[in-house]
Every structure is written in C-alpha cells, then in structure tokens.
Amino acid sequence: MTTEDLSFVIVGHVDHGKSTFIGRLLHDTNSLNTDRLEELKAACFALGRELEFSFITDHLQEEREQNVTIDTTQIKFKTDKRNYTIIDAPGHKEFLKNMLTGASQAEAAVLLVDAHEGIQEQTKRHATLLHLLGVRQMMVLLNKMDLIEFRQERFDQLKTELLQFLKTIGIMPAHVIPLVAKDGDNCVLRSERMNWYTGATFLDALDQFTCKNDTAHKPLRYPIQDVYKIADKRILVGRVESGTICQGQEIVFLPSQKHTRVASIEVFGKTNKKEAAPGESIGITLADPLFIERGEIACAIDAPPPIAKKIEAHAFWFSPHAFEKKDRIRLKLATQDVQCQVEKVDRIDSSTLNTIEKDATLLHTAEIGKFILVPEKPLVLEPFDQIEELGRFVLEKDGEPCAGGIVVSTHGTL
Image (tube, rainbow, N blue to C red; front, side, top):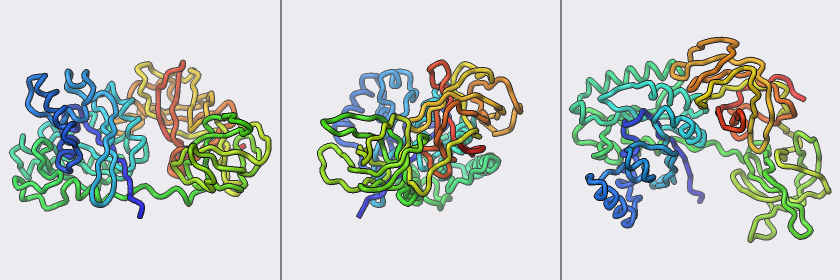
C-alpha cells in the first residue's frame, strides 16, 4: 500500500507565530529526535532565552539573532493517515520572492493570523498570492488566543472579517481554528481553555485535505533537462511531470515536432526498467538518431500540448525595480528559456486583486501583472489548471529573477 504524501505551506504576517507553531507541531507529533531537541536547547541557552520552538525552523544563525524567518524551509512529519512536508514561508515583505517559491510547491495552505493584531496587509497579500498560484485548499489559524483572553466574541469577529475578505478573492477556507501555538492549544490536542470551540484541531483538519490529483492519467509531459553521452548511448535526462513513459512508446518532441520511439529507460543502478511515472527523474534513449536539446518536451503523440503564439498570464512582480513595458523579458518555464515581448500588462493590487491601471507602462514591486506575452520563438505550455509544471513560470530581467506566475490561457497556436 502506497503512503500518501501532501505538502502544505504556512504563510502569514511577520511575528504572527508561524515558526513557533511549526515547532510545537513537530514536538507534539513526536517528530523531533533527542539530538535535535538538545541542539535547540543549547541554541536558546547561548542567547539567554527560554526554550523557543521557533528555532526548529529558523535554523540560520542570522534568523536566530534577528528573530525572523528569511528563507523557505521544508520539514517533514507524518500522521497515521499520511506523510507531510511543511513549507515555512517568510512573512516580511522583502522576502516575498522566497514565499512565492515555497507556495508554488504546495498542495494546500495554512494562513496564520495573530488574534490580537488581526488582519494585516501581508495577511491579505499572502492569501491573494496563494489564490494566484492555484492553491485552493486552505485553512485559517487564529493564533495567540491567550492574548485576547480566549474570548469567543473576538474570535467570531475576526472570523467574519477574514471570511468576508477571502470571499472577495475567491477563497473559502475549510476551517477557521482558534489556537495558542506556543502552548499547543488546538494544534494536536483539543484546548481545555476554549471549550466553546467544537470544530477540528489543526491536525484533524489537515488530515481532511486531499492530495493532489494523480497526474499519471494525464498525457505524457517529459521536459528534457540535459543530454549525456555515455559509452555508445545518447541519454536524454529529465523528470516526468505527467503521464507515464514506457519502453517502446511512440513520442513526439515539441516544439521541434520530431517523432520517434523510446528505446530504453535509464536509471542509475537499475536495469530493465520498463516505465516511469510522474515525479521520477530518469533518462531515455531513442530508437532514431535525432538531435534533441534541453528545452524540448517529450509528449504523448495523441495528446500534444499547444505551442503558443501569445500567452495570457498572471505574474507577481517581486523585483525591487519597477517593470517598464519597453523592457526585454525572459520567460523560463519547465526547461524552456524564451525571450518575450510584452504586448499588454494590467496592474493589479496584490492585496485586493483590484485593477489599478489597465494597459499600464509600469509595474511596481509587490503588484500583480496581468500580461499578454508574445514569445520570440516557439514555446510549449499549458494553462496552470491543466498541468502545473507546464503552466508555472519565472520571469527574468537583465539576468535576475523578477516575477513568478502562471499561464491562464493561450491565444493562437503554431
């Protein structure tokens, strides 16, 4: 029996308690070994502090000294139902690039809000980014209920405000849970200090989320990352993003439109592998002596993706430098790298999703751009809601990453 795996991102305004919550969760699910606990205690003692669960995730010395999460951290734990990967995303505005990277890998999200401080700008922005990235499973945790004396009326007020805002951006959270992360109330065990709350604990609610739909039933998409010459074999390596690839299978490479069959599937240390499933990194050899380069995508011959003339896309601009419509921009999608012209961009407020300006000439930091892009050479892609890895991209300007986004639709195909 295969064990399920689910990754979820935890986001929220800085100092609302994400790292403390993760530390408490790992402690209460017995996911910390003795050496890790001793390391944690020693680090706290060296800084003259009491035991702080946040140090489990804030593992960089700079983070410990400044008491702020900087990088995206991934930590694993498990319940009786499945394995989990926690993606701890930074809360500071200047760390939104890392938060965007973390959220793009998640199947579900946890939005954590300080019950005392209430909804902040970053709360709204993070929720909006989750929606932009296609994360549809979400719950809200109202943390630090001890600071408002566990009052149900304050919880109900905040819950109403949050639900009203989330509704405006198309999000309906599965649960809104009151908790105290540092003490563990409603994290794994039900709180005795909030008897008025009769809903699920965090862990019970988490187990109710569903894992991403299996992509094995979708058409084959196998982006080529590199080509190696080993002995007398020319091996094309990459990761299967959807569908399955089998020895003897007929495939087409796009955008070159070259047809062939899979002669063999190569995996280091294994022989006679006959097929590979989504998520597997493999090599293949071909039945014909074709010249294939990085950026080509091996596809199911009866269900190829479009080669787009124009792309409608939504992207979050995280660069500190504003984007000008006249700027040259590069789009990186799967293993493809294509220069694009910007035909049109609308400026969108990332906290509210309201349009600031249509057909704009500038796009500023922390704004969302609704782009019409024209690639300068053939580009193979699909809408994000169909196959994520062919619908998620990064934009670069002057060699630096500046935005991340998703493909909404294609306009015309080659």
